[in-house]
Length: 511
Image (cartoon, rainbow, N blue to C red; front, side, top):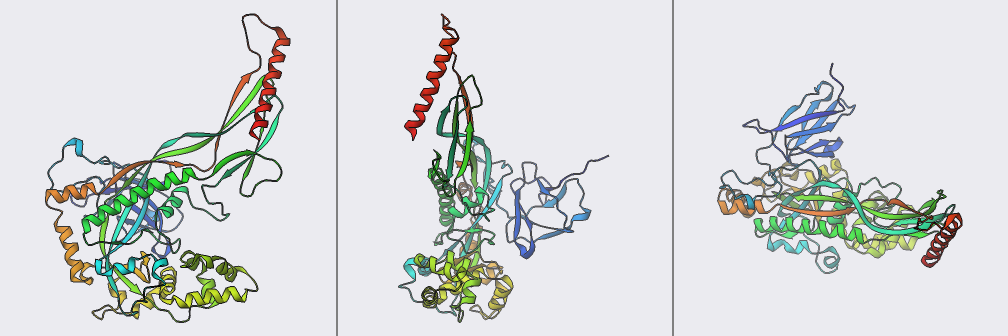
């Protein structure tokens, strides 16, 4: 009799040989095609996905451009189910097939990737003649003229994946120590400014790290976190620069989180806003009890995988009459994140929540939106409903007269200035210059020099990430100290009084 399994097991295999393929991402798709969870096949090619009560299970094996697989969840067996891996998926640490074997000392560190948490990032690259659209919006909005609403730009999409592998939690720095005599009690306030304290925040620490590493996001529904755009005149260099940028930002972000305020103080008066209160007592009569507050940390191995390059299309929009209360309240979250003038943040908050809305604040917001209509039109299109965006795209044509819905995927990967970036369905729909560059990059996979360059594009770093909360440990210091000549019970009581008084003096000094 077999026991019930709480997860489905899939084995990712090679299409030609049937061998297990490690390091392949597998996504569970929810409604609208958005990913509801990510997994990576282990060294045996296995992926274990928790079961649910829905009748259908939609999976995507590989990157976002792969077709979805829909299975009947009610008839899936508990035995491993084979799924074929895409032919051209880049596996971390794998060299090109025609490359000569590298010496063991130069082999990549992550030849057998283990399961981990998968993060996806996206970066748009443009040619040097289009680099004006990559300027920072704060510097661009006051000087650059709005783009021609009928002109589209072409670029390249670099899709990068990060795999976080936990190396275990450990104790970090000691934050605070306090000693209590028998029967004493103290209240301490723990203030942790490293993580968000919003009541509705459901993000895990790694999700927050991803948003800190990436550029300013339009919304929470994007499959990949956008990175700042770049000029990609040389595609191998742009790919290597993106990997290096992502690794460096990840390290700096983890270091910045550890530098944020985390403190423990004795509570005097009212509880500080955003702080939690711990009450400590010494219920031991045999001596002084010392409590130590310790910062918990977790070490991770972070693998930045070789980017995948795809053609992209950047589309400008100019919507009519979006400077209204209805539009601002509907897209207020996206507008608030993308404000060119951060001083208008309180005004948008009043338009979103105040009743009645102050007329002066409302007019300032509307005047600002009307003055930068292409930028906020792109923001609204990018953050809006995919069905409504589809109808807007169907009205636009590419330079060859084809509807944009026929040449692009209706998936927003970024907003670059006044443009919304979409992946193209095929390199045939891009310009001859980009088509030649992408074809040349694929052709370079054969020579040994290029294979070594592509293998070096992946990178691995070790980071230390703080864990929310604090750890608490205690030490007991007996008051009775045995000596060669026993001082008796009176001497022991005197030693206990000295210890207790010393603890109280230390607490007064800390205050």
